[in-house]
Length: 474
Image (tube, rainbow, N blue to C red; front, side, top):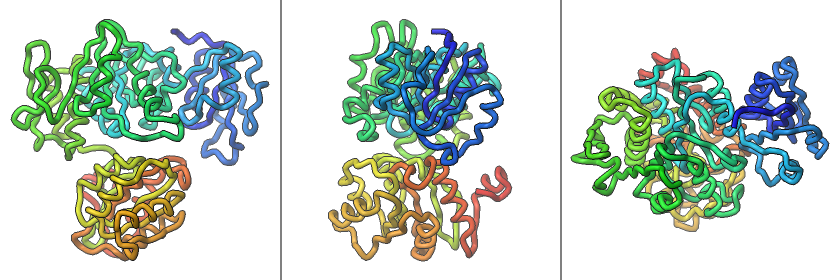
């Protein structure tokens, strides 16, 4: 559906809403941007939008905002259950996500990735792999990764490729979205407060490939039971490529003699060994498998992909080693916004000083705290979730004298970790929670943590690549 709006209302003044307002004006619509917060509580300067002719309305949102509107674009952070969006549906006004707006204006295909965990790593790697065919200038990476997908689609134009990280929030207001290739990495409990149940959460994930057609491909994790079963709901005529780290599939991405290998249409294409792969850990083998499969179906050459797979070392905020202080290594895993993701980080180390907590998603903590007891020497708790996390840790027998409260203060958490940590231990921020009780997003939380660590007294050493890239700033 090409962009046709004359009068557009954007609800939610975050990164996606800001970009949607800009795109609306560029394509000729009159645009109103609305947010329930007052302007002073939002971390943006809205004057550039006003100069473009965007009407900005902050505070209480009444149905009068819908007068004359023929398109409502809903930012990912805004649930469709709010009264203003429901009123738009009732009035027969088209409601779309910012992702769907990107679809309206895109002239190049999307290669989309979703899942509870691993999306950002996989999408970033996918973007690097797509560059081997389309070049840097004609390859875009956007979506839930922190860059609005509509902005990327507009910049890339035609004859390119767009790697899109897609969240369940972005699919909630999407009536259609049509990637050429989709990948679903995993589905574990998350965002239940937003969606109401695991079944609805999974349905939002599946919505990503619901409008694929003949010639498109869906890449699914065979080792995840929920994801494996999605094959029965893939549209007719769309091929499914499984990937598996554990099973020797006759067709799909597999590990053969420890080498990531694609079996497809009678061919067997080896890529790199697990040891050669730049990103480490079993979960990252799965992420790489998914990225390879998507890139292959995007037309990328196997041999051209191999150097990228060896070089790519991961993304910021995901088990990111960024400093050593007085002989103790510090890792930023701020992207671990749920327990399953945090468990993967805990499995990477032993003797951990763990900083956890934040905006509580109320998910079950049993498996997470069992892993905390197994791997952690001390537990430092922050944010809204601190008391529930403390009780859950005590319930599994974690020593209460090794549980520390830092309130809503990351500086206090870092000071405690520094005071406790000894050589041979690892300090890990892996919150198992969202960040919204203390920060605008997980990236702000991760960068604050890194800055505080790098400002600690004592001998601070940075990995050589960080020194070269950032001039000594983490």
